[in-house]
Image 1 (cartoon, rainbow, N blue to C red):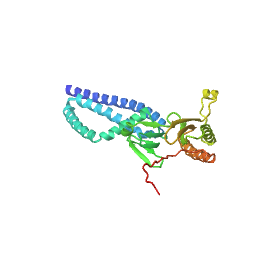
Image 2: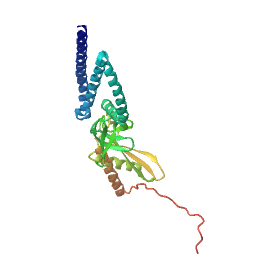
Image 3: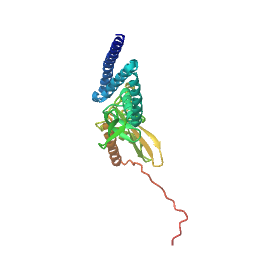
Image 4: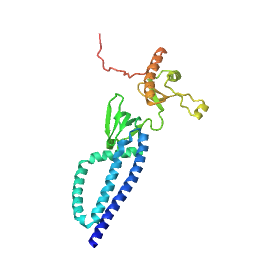
Length: 284
C-alpha cells in the first residue's frame, strides 16, 4: 500500500511538472511572439521567419521538465543519467559541427533587436558592398546592389562590419559636386554657374534651416576646398530627397556644368606636365 502511494505521488509530481512546463511555455511563447511581431513590423518582413525562437524556447522548457522528472523519480534516475550522458555527447558533436550556423542565427537575432538597418534601407557594408537591403533571415542578409545582383552576406559577417545606412533616420542626402578649374578662372562666375545649374535640376531641394533662411544663405553652398598641381577644386553642396535622386542629380550636374563652362569660356583643369630638355645637341 505504501509503495502504491509513493507511485501515485511520483505520478502526480510528474503531471505537476508537465503542467507548469505547459503554462510557462504558453506565457513565454506569447511574450516572444509579441516581440517578434513588433520587430518584424519594423524590419518589414514576415514574422513567421522568426518562429525558430518560439520553438527553441519550447524545447528548452520541456527538456528541463524532463530532466527534473527523471532526476526526481528513483525508478527513472538511472535511465535519466544514461540519457543525459548520451545527450551531452550528441549536443557536443552537433554544437561543434554547427558552430558557424549558430553564430549566424545569434547575429540575426541581434540584428532584429538593435535594428542597424531594415528591409528597403540603402546601406554600405564595409568598403565592398552597397545596395538596398532586400531580405533579412536568421542566417544571412540579402543586399541588391546597383547592378541588380544579390549579395548574400552571413549575419555573423555583417555584424562585424561598419554599416553606413542612408535611410535609417531620413532619406535626404547632401551630394558633393566637385569640379577642378584652372588657376586663372573667375571664381565668382564659377560659383554662380554651379549654383544656377544646381537649382535648375528637378531633384535639387532647399534644405536650409530657419536660421540659414534668416541669414539669407544660398540653397547651394559653393567653396574652394583644395588647390593642387592641376588647379582649384570647387565643391557645391547640393541636397536631394533620397540617395537615388542624389546620384542622378550629381551625374547630371557634372554634364550640365561642364557644358555651361565650355559655352562661357571657363577652363576646367586637367593634368598637364612641362618637359624641359637639357643639354640638347646643337643643330646646323
